[in-house]
Each structure stands twice: as C-alpha cells, then as structure tokens.
Amino acid sequence: MNEVALVGAGVSKFGVRKATYRDLIWEAGKACFDSTPGVRPGDVEGLVVGSVMPERTAFQSHIASLAAEALGIRPSALSARTEHMCASGTVGIRYAYAFIAAGLADLVMVLGVEKLNQPSGDEAILNMGTGVDREWEAAFGLTAPPCFALAAQRHMAAYGTSEEQLALVGVKNHTHATKNPNAHFTRGATLDQVLCSRMISTPLRLYMCSPITDGAAAVLLASGERARALTDRPVWIRGTGQALDGFQLTSLHEDYAHWPALRRAAGAAYRMAGVGPADVDLAEVHDCFAIAELIAYEELGFCKKGEAGPFVAAGRSDYGGDVVVNPRGGLIGCGHPLGATGVAQAAEVFVQLRGEAGARQVPDAALGLTHNNSGMGEHVVMLYGREA
Amino acid sequence: MSYFRAIDPFPLESAEQTKLHEFYRHLGEGRLVTTRCAGCGATAWPPRGFCPACVSDRFEWVDLAREGTVHAFTVQETGLPAGFEAPRVFAIVKVDGHRVFTILTGADPGAVRVGQRVALAPLRVADDPTGHPRWLPAFRVASP
Ligand SMILES: [Zn+2]
Image (tube, rainbow over all chains, first blue to last red):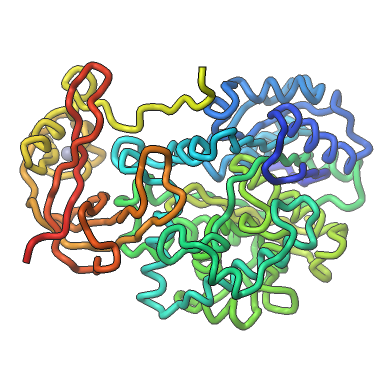
C-alpha cells in the first residue's frame, strides 16, 4: 500500500449561518487551498463530499458534483458523496485514503458540508429523526438526545458518574472553543452555567449537548511521493478502523454504557499504526453529548471502564493531562454540522501536528486521533502522525 | 406555499404497503406479535422479513407477552421534533427476553423506575394518506 498524508486543511466558520451550501463549500475550499499554495483546484484528481441531508435541507442531491464545480475541481480518479449520518466526513476520508493507498489516485480532496438550520427550528429538529430507524424509533419522536441519555443514565447507575462530571466535559469543550474563532460558541461556560442550563433529556442538559450547526471543512490527501513534494510537514495517516454493533437501539450492547464497536474500531487503528492509547497526544472525539466523550475515554483506552468521570474531573483530558481531548472545542463547543464534523476533526489534527494551532496548540503534538460516530453503535477511528 | 414541508413521520402499515402489515393489524387489536423464522425457528424483535441466521424469508406470527419491565429510560423535556409533545418518556422495555424500544404513555415522568412493570398500550396515530388507521407499540405503567 502507498503511504497517504494530509497536505492541506481548511474550515469555514461554524454556527447558525445565513449561507447556502455553495457559500459554505467556497469558504472551506478556499481555506484548504490557502493552506496548500502548491495545489490549485485543477491539480486535484478526486473529490469526496460528506453530506447527510442536503435533499431535506436544500432540496439538493448530486452534491459532490455541485461542490466540484463550485471549486473548479474536475475529478478524473474519484468523485463521490458519502452519507453515513454523523460519521459521513470520516467515512469520506477513509474512501480517499483507500483510493490513494491502492494507487488509484495521488491527490484527493475530502469536503464535508451541512446546512442544518432552517427558518423553522422545528423543522431542523424533525430532520434529525432521519438518522434513527424511521419505522421503529423516529415514529415515536426519537432523535439523538434520548439515545445518548440512555447511555448516561446507565453510566451513572453502574459507575457512580455524576452530573458534575458530565458537566465538566461541557465546561472543558466550551472553554477550548474560546480559542477557536471558527467555533459555533466562543464565550465559554462555567460549571454553574452548564449545571443550570435547561434539561434536554434526563440527565443531559443543554450545555452537555452539541447544537444544530451549519458549516463546512475540507482536507487534501496525497500519496507519499506527492505529499513530500508539496510540503515538508505532511501529516501521515497511520491507522484507521471502523466497526458496527447495530443500527437500532435494541440491537446494541444491552448495557448502553458499553460501546464495543468503538473498542474494535480503535483496536484496529492502534494495531495498524503500531501504537497504543498512551502514545496519543491529542484526540478529537465525538462529543455529540458529554456522555459520549466520557465513554470514548474508556473505549479508546485512555482510562479503564467506569473511570471516565474521575478522569475528566482530574484534568487528565485537558492541557497538561494525559491527552488533550477536543482542543478545537469538540462538537459541544464548535457545533456539529454532521457531514463536516469528521473532516473538521482531521483539519484540527492537521494544524496541531504541524504546530500551527496558535493559542490552542498542544505542545509538541506528534500523534493525533480522531473518533467520529454515527449513533452509539457505529464508530470510525483515525490515527495521524507527524512521522510516516 | 409554506417553507415547512414535514414528512409523514409514521410507518406505512397497510397490507398494500408492508410485508409486516400483520404486526400492525394485531397491534390495533391489542396484541403484540412478532415474527418467528419458518426456516430456523428464531424469534426476532422487531419483526423481520429476512432471517440473517438461515437466510429464509418465510416467517409466521407469534404472540409476545403484553407486559414487560423497564430496562432503561429517559425523559426528554426539550427539543422534540415538530408534532411530538414534551415531556416524553422514551424507554427500552424487556418483553419475553426481547428489548423493545417504546414510549411510556400516561406516566408521571418523575415516578418511572428501571425494573418497573409496564403493559402494552397501543397508540393510535394519524391515519395514513389513504385513511388506513395506524398504531404504534407504546406501553403504560401497569396497574399494581
Ligand atoms: Zn432463520
């Protein structure tokens, strides 16, 4: 297999954007090309676009070709759109990675884009029901918050995890987001604010949840040879894994605080890279809800099962701790424009491993991990290194 | 034309629309049924028209208990989709060894407990566009 590296990355402003899909694609595309002066749109051989519901929110299918034209890319090796709910972006990166590793392309852009906010807030929430089983789950009004709330209930009952420990994830990620001008929220949050914010689904309060966000992100992937020609600081893809336990809630592990698919996906990525959890300097994990970040610490191996609450409370997932988790602010602070999230995670690892993360730089970051999930039952993990 | 164009959130349940229509017909009569594979005898939840164990697509309908126990639950207070009212008690109910995703109707959200006994309470929702009645497998807190 050929080596594959990130050679460029860019992110749009995340938030409630008064912007079209095309505006967001332009913004992220420009930021990505600006990061890679040696690459112009005509050089890019392939484009993969992660996007979940443009059909619902913009009455637009065929989004990859729209994006290619918007950016002046004429794909000759790969052109595709990935829809895999909240993990669409990282699934797109895996496709581009596989194409380049197989020698079928040398330079591919992966772009994630989502415009979720609509003139009616009710509509934006209703659309999120498409991510669960329409006949057996969404028909009852189910969207993501109650699913993750079930995991939080169980984690609290089994391990004594407290509401305050859940809140500390919100505090940390909102605080990190104050150093990220592209984040949805940039004002930070105190423990009191998180604990007093309104209840969404017991025990998850507003500031423990990611918001409905619009945004886009783009990364450029290149073969080893092309990467070395383009930059003296490529960010290498070292490992990847993806695993599925189930789609419906009732197909998952009976104990909702256990996510075996994440353990398997992480195990595959660590084995491929020849590293372990202790080697990871920073991790962009899928904190769609605070409980997801806590369970991710455990399943990724940063701490033992059941010890995630004390782990966050002791600052071990923050600057100065064992591993800096969600330095850009995570989904809770940055927002969660579904298809863009996984790509934005990769973009953060790119700037961190190149030492370009400014005020939120993780000192001497050499190995970065991204974790993107689509529901509690499906997980994708990537490992990126400064060294090939 | 209004901007908001909601999709119909409920399943199409009639015989013309789904291979699993018997499930919904029985539910309307107050029975909770599911599929048993005619090939290997495996009982599934939710009902299914294809068996991953033996790859058969033949099945028969069998009754499940009309009572179960709460395995897990959460009360959603804010952020429900349009057309669904808060507070809403989402629950996983154990019925004959199967985990059933449902809502608890008529419950005091503050009084729901894991392990509590609940009973099937089929919920009539909006008719389909042809006027066919539709039901969902909801539960309620069982009388002591
Ligand atoms: Zn069978």
